[in-house]
Image (cartoon, rainbow, N blue to C red; front, top):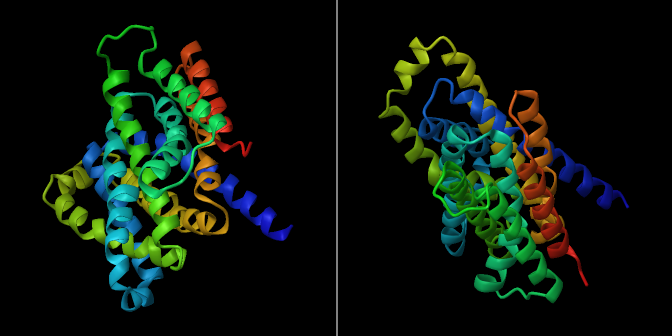
Amino acid sequence: MQKKWVRWFLFATLAIVWGSSFLLMKKGLRTYTYDQMGALRIVFAWLLAAILSVKDFKEIRKSDFWPLMWVGLLGNGIPYYLFPLAVKHLDSGLVGIFNSLVPLFTLITGSIFFGRNFKPIQVLGVIVGFSGALLLLFPKLNLEVNPNLIYGSLAIASTICYALSINTISSKLEHMRSIAITGLSLSVVGPPSLVYLLSTDFIDRLTTHPLGYTNLGIAAFLGMVNSALAIIVFNQLIKMTSPLFSSSVTYFIPVVALMWGAYDGEQLGFFHLLGVSTILIGVYLVNKRR
């Protein structure tokens, strides 16, 4: 019972923290470009996670190298650049909705690449979930190229990366401490992101923009709390439960994201509500055991 209480507490905490990330990205973009925000988030997450996991660096196995590489790139590197770009062009609440596709892609990639099995009800869930995503990509039920399609697709690509990372952790890195997985995988993308960041006009933006230091603080919070600490908790949740249960934290991320978006003045339309409801029904079906 105690373990069950702990896993649900971690589950709810992650939903609140990650659901707030999209609005924080939006605020940070007042000063920095989308790629600078991505790099800042990775660098701050890497610095904290590396400090917390420093003793694990000497215990890494040769067989862990490629799984950690993939987790670093797919679980942190690529999504942290794509999500800010999507948030730059779409409402943060809408981008948060796309994040709820993670459980669907966890099931699909788990079946294709990791030998996990589909059940008929889960296949139905995947179809329903994709239908919800299409409602958001094509809000007027046409096939015209529009910002929802272009930048929403970037958010969806990020969820596929997350799904592959989750399955990799579950199948290849189960023997490692969650702190070690976080610190070692972030060390794959942290140093290159720092080098890239310093090659941009980041310093100029920091020192001349009126909100430069405020939004640097937002980026630091995103990196250290919403990334490093949250990923440590998430990796622990994967080890305590299952990839599908853990990825289902995205049930509630869009709800939190939409609430923050509405608070910030973003408009909620019928297709937002219909899309998120359809996706959540799909995720529910994917998680049914029978």
